[in-house]
Length: 406
Length: 228
Image (cartoon, rainbow over all chains, first blue to last red; front, side, top):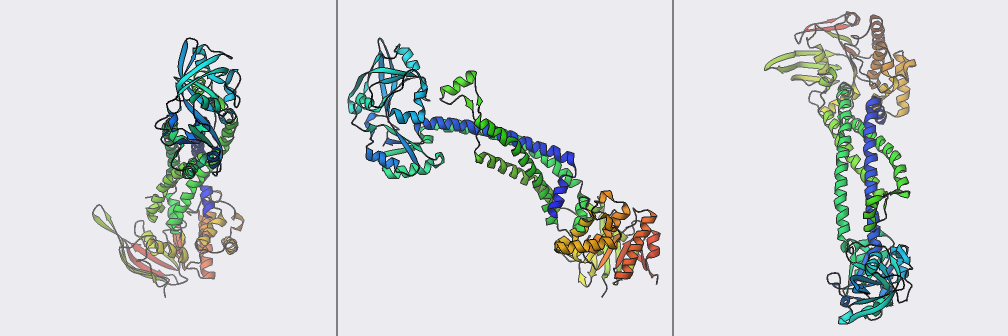
């Protein structure tokens, strides 16, 4: 019957309860939409980063601090087998990456030149889809694809031979002449000011004069993006100290920091939202408590312990909050789900910024359960804080003063 | 053994530094089956006395025994449980729980006592029939007349099968017809079931029906008479 009393008391003043519910529903809906949009965006940023770096990268010892070809690793079939045999590893993209001067005619530009397996590379970075002229690379061919801005600067087109000149493996000269087979439009963070070109892995080994099977990194893709740390530890243990295993968070700290700083702003906005909602709830609960003091006095007089009285009041607050949260979910879940599958397109300058950072120009909404649980937890904490006021009031209740209204 | 045994009871309030003796050394006893009215002018201390006897208010000095159990030294929680099991209350303003129906108001007390649901349902029906408002069982207090609400309050007071019922000005908000009906009801319960009633009242109609009248003035008993 205590539940009955609590439930009926909530609806005793329908207008007041409805207004309070509306406040809670609004806070829940706005909070969920905001966090879902933020997390969706973070997810897109992470996906973009992971596509480039892999969830985890394997380097030669010390390569990250001194990116020299001399610290490249021998990715033999046995090494690749060891990597791929670790539980949770989906694939490994081998890359041989360094810098070279790329020349055509009278023009030269220093550029990153990445040797990769075209098929595996495309699987994760969708590089083939970025081709705007010519075609994508084929495995084993001797050809090069250039970033559009680099091709434009050099004045090189499809079929032209470009000269590559740079430092190779262990002091050798890296020099080659490769035909341009395609031009792509794809900007990677950190390479905005320089040129960028891709060549098949064997062509890169020939250019940099490395032994067969040599790579500067293995970008490891995992089945479960949440198992990064655990898998990284396993990989490090499996491969030994001659390899450095780093997660994308370590190799792309700017992405982590960007997400963290943006998230703090979101949390601040949420705090304001819930403080407003909390005061709305508190007002209702306090008024309801004050105007029923006589009733509480009588209930205590006829034998209801204060603890049970406090429980009823606590339940009333929880019922209000629970109904508010459920209604908020009923309103927000369809909206979030819709925008998850139909992200809001971004246009104009903002779209250009998205593209520049290799993030699709859309505002995706996240449906991560954690967002909903976190909101639920925040609202529960708010309810507990608000519910503590009537509980204190009941503890201080003096029967005679309550009954006589003194 | 008396149902109520108050021994040299005092209640003193410290008002603006001047002590006010609301109850000033009262001793009295009520035996089982009595139909007693405590009367006196406003401010004489009758409500304060009833509240102390009912364990609703603390005493400054003295001793109060209910059915042989001393209640003035009990903790708040012990007193609450004691009231639940052994004392029934009828208030001037009915004071029913507004969100519960008549039947639920009665069953509420029994639920606090831990009585099973089926037993509660049977007893609440019996009590409602006894106080003559069985047809009002599913109505909430707001939809009932004052007389009907006070009948529910009487049924609620009896729900826990208490040793006695304390009624503070039970007829103050009732018209003469409802007052007469209520008094008939309580007198009948007293006569037939031996329920002990103690009223605080200044309503002459109640005083006329009481078999014992304790008159107070300035916090002291000035007369204690049996109507025979």
